[in-house]
Length: 77
Image 1 (spheres, rainbow, N blue to C red):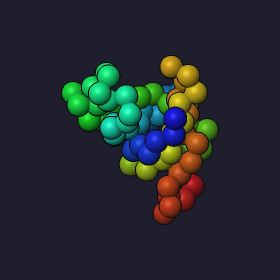
Image 2: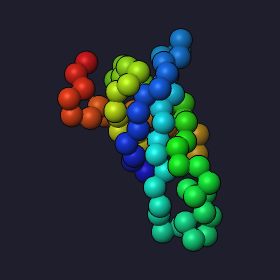
Image 3: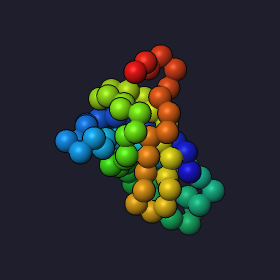
Image 4: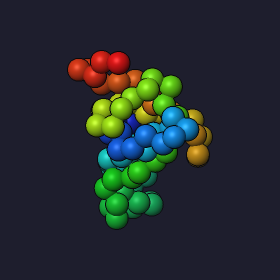
């Protein structure tokens, strides 16, 4: 799954904490997880060296593997 996120913090190991805004999906009627918490903080690999405040694209690669895969327009590194 690919989503837009905002970088909130950079850790010493280079990973980033990103805030992902949860949006409704076809499964919401089943799990309703997006109703209780609209923003999810996730630790992600940061191979693009995104900085705090950058808007990025993140991709889930399994349950606990999240990686920044793109910077949004206007973000230059």
